[in-house]
Length: 194
Ligand SMILES: C[S@@+](CC[C@H](N)C(=O)[O-])C[C@H]1O[C@@H](n2cnc3c(N)ncnc32)[C@H](O)[C@@H]1O
Image (tube, rainbow, N blue to C red):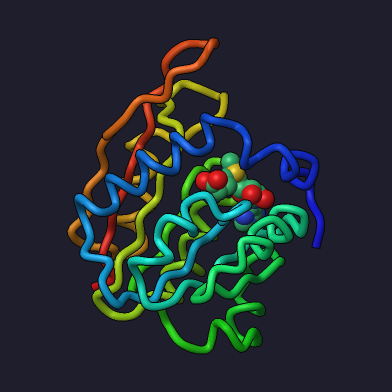
């Protein structure tokens, strides 16, 4: 499966901001979740910047991305407890893919949800992949309500989590990414499948 992200794959791992973002997200994950022995679904894993950090800490990871070039770079890392899927997530894929037969303790989506054509609809499919008591965590550029640019507002994320029946919802802004274009806050949202 290929998509518009293919062209970024070659240089993704050598971009220092990708590594910084993944390390900051991972550090926040460790602050909030005990990763020991968890089964994890890494949604929109890219080349696996976050996957690689989680891999030694968890039982098993299924990592999915529609960009076959991104997945090619993840596969080259040969992480022993990671399986990859190069496809778009859909109800049909969940019903038919052998790696998606069992539900997960944790789903992570690092800098993915704001790029989705229908964030709210995707959240329904993601929740269907969580065990009871399982946790979903996402990180995205924070945008304000009026913004039409890249990112998600905390209001929209909270509404989507509530509408989907997540509980113990926490939405905050734990870190800022600095670049030549200025500082951008990153939203982190956590919700539990009741
Ligand atoms: C900004 S990158 C983040 C990659 C990785 N999570 C990381 O932190 O390095 C966004 C990723 O989302 C993936 N993506 C884009 N549209 C998607 C969709 N509809 N479903 C799942 N992933 C998608 C892209 O292929 C790309 O790898």
